[in-house]
Figure 1 (cartoon, rainbow, N blue to C red):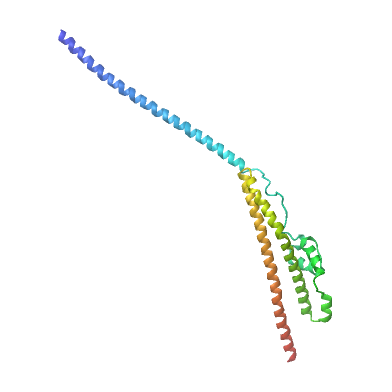
Figure 2: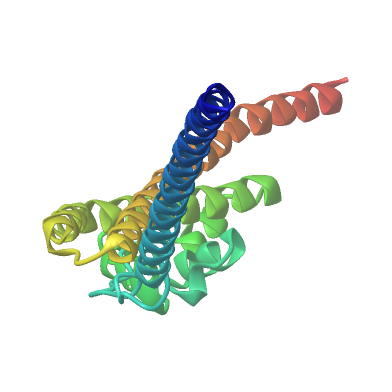
Length: 231
């Protein structure tokens, strides 16, 4: 009887030890799972914080990229325009013919007209050839207009240099990204306007060169007419 009791007690002891081991394993697994869940929650919290920070930064960037900085019209001055009366070449020649006109170019033509020794009426009195008369008028008007435009642009160069330097000095005074970009665009636009002014001067030079070449054509035509009449 005692032997059976000892066997039963031994059996219970062995089973309890195995059960305890199982409980310990389960407990460890649960603790590990809880740790993983805690880490996941912490990671999710960090991701959420990062998203909120990114949203805040993007909101700040958007606010800095919108609105009116004022640099587009800051101390604007038109150094390139010749005035509405000089919108096309025919109007320019018309002002040169009259020796005066409105706008910057018209005023410069008026200033130089008295210094420019040309008189179509006197020329036409002495030269009766119609082609020669037309060429003299075109030549004299082109020379006066080109000289006036060249002198006008030259007089503006120093003002344009000072103007560009003034804009350059404003670079360090911009307060946000939008203002910096707007100022950079403003300086770029001013540079483009200067390039267009250079292109206009090149066009005037080409026009004057073309008129000079026309003299050769007129001379060849006159010789051809003379030879035709001689036959």
